[in-house]
Image (tube, rainbow, N blue to C red; front, side):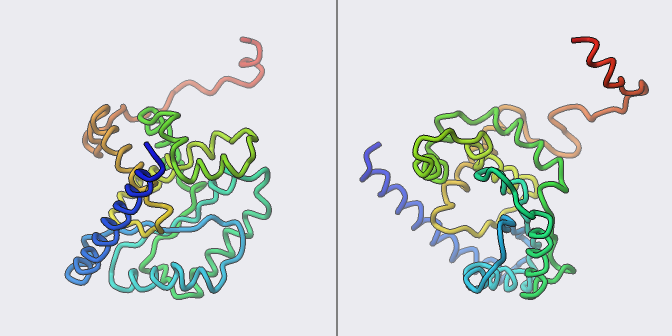
Length: 231
């Protein structure tokens, strides 16, 4: 694909998304209960006034309209492009405090972290089976990170960052995900993953699971010394 064609496709995608956003606003005004929104931030530092006008103000508005709102504090995504996490525990609490301060009501909003929901992160495994290395490397966020590293090896978490975002969205069954222009390819990747998963494994529901339920073992776990002896 040529550069010009790529730019044209990106502009067309943006135009479609902008038009769809207008349609969704009208649908929300009629029946906000039809929607579940997922949004959030990485706890990498303090929020500032730009965050308020860029996203927080809109989150408060949408939650106040009665939309089922899920806000993710993406603590696991802090380690995708960093050698250390810093004071991540304090930053998670700081982010949560900022959310409450701007008016996000915990009676109307569900706050959660990656580390508190193991099932979300487990979705990465089957989702990774339906994407290719080439597809992930074409993602604009991944390509930009690769360019910025100057040839330094990229972490596996950074390469699979779009898949983790797909897991975020599909785990909570969100049908409204506010993003900027640069994040549109991530939404498209999530659609592709959902479609391929259904085609390969079937639609998963509580009644029709794709894999059997885990059953507790009656045998006690083997001690570490026994595991070491089997090498």
